[in-house]
Length: 141
Image (spheres, rainbow, N blue to C red):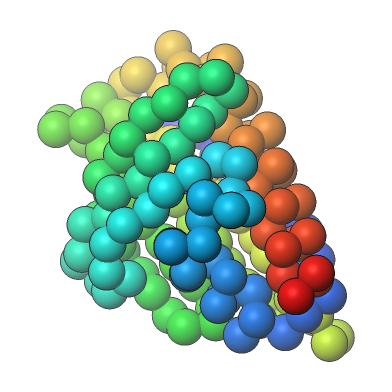
């Protein structure tokens, strides 16, 4: 297992951050990592995420595990055999003063994880880029 965890503070209430984070149609205009997203944000639904990690585009179809408005969005992407590889992605929002603390993390599990060090390191850089872009987008509105 390997975990990456990033966080940032955004000068806006959680509802404003949530509105941008869950507006999939707006992703192409601000999100450098998840450049397109489609699907229904409800537990058990399948999303289609087009991502660019480093220079490598990929499409994932994770299942939504949790969707609590203004608090948490979590999904699971896995290979057919999850014991080989799975990745549980989480956006957590919590109020801090007049703003929001965003915790953006992922837990990687499975036999392939030790072989994916460089890929996971790149994912952490991608998370930081997404966080910065989200902060800029929300604070500029």
